[in-house]
Length: 515
Image 1 (cartoon, one colour):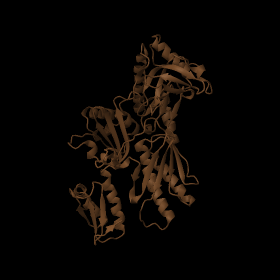
Image 2: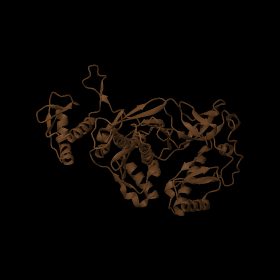
Image 3: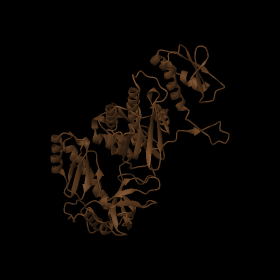
Image 4: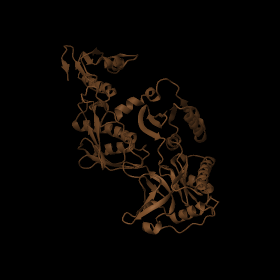
């Protein structure tokens, strides 16, 4: 498995594309004007408490107040409030917390009105970015994430990632962290810490303590509301969270960002520093790696898959609905049940990719093709769960229902990636019509052609617009040549001036249209 990170920089934003064996699986956009990223910490002011919601609305500087529920306050809220008050007034200069007295924990079933008051200053962290008409979701249970560990102020707990399965390794890590944990701070050990030495963990921990100290210094005479600790730049944060030994390349088209990434990799994985490359080609970086084409074909309402199958993805206010269709296909399956299982397995792989790619969150309902056998439904469920195991977002998958539906809940922390793939129709009289992206027509031609080749037609001629014909026959090897190598049958291509851009037809040796 080869993972590549391709980064495109512009004057207003940075785009990140994560490729797995050449296939696009994640797409992120970091915009300069995004002031409310997940992980950012603000010194804010309580605007009002709402007893009915057991929550408070907090002014963090966004047009809509942020939402702070009682359960997101954290047990050590009184200690945090006391710390903020003393630091803000200049009475406390030691930010290490080793001598800072802890207050009594709040009641986990208490009321918001007993915990915080209007106009009170509080440190909060963004846990969910503003989505649609809602303001950010925040928490006052702070955490500062590093490469190997997460620092939790006002706590004394040490937690080990559940993804580390070895009991011996868990015990080793807990013992190491216990020896280096600064007093007044809790520590969460991340999965990537498995097998690491105490020196690496200690270095990471000290960096996080330094970030906490730098943030605390800003609290004195800080203007309310204001950001006091920002997440590291998106490129570094993505590397921090997803980088592992399977990465084979990181390519970036901005020199400044290139040096930043090399510097960061030098810290976390010095032996991998040389995989960072600077793109200096006249061809745009996303074109070079085939990402633009994948974006055009992967987003939109309908998503094509192999063997003629396709997905229909609908978005509603309450949930996402995905329908699996087998399409007009022929295969060698012995029965309808085998066909259904085959299509469903292909669909499950693509759905797992689509959820990550679009960053779909909330409730997702998938209508798979009905299968009568319980063991097939179990096979499908296990396959979907395995395909989603690499998904960093928290999710839960329910087994198939009696109707063949699978329900998924997936964590949503930022707006969904939604790219419009349909384009303006140049032939529309009112200039308001839309057509499928022209780049998608080649995929449709290829899908239809494979179906026809399986039906054993002797000679097939493709009639299409001259531009499409030129695209299919240019270069070496051309797309047509690749068709020949894959299927051992030559396809004649006939340019037709009378055809519209997206129009195409197939004919047999007698010139009769094949449908």
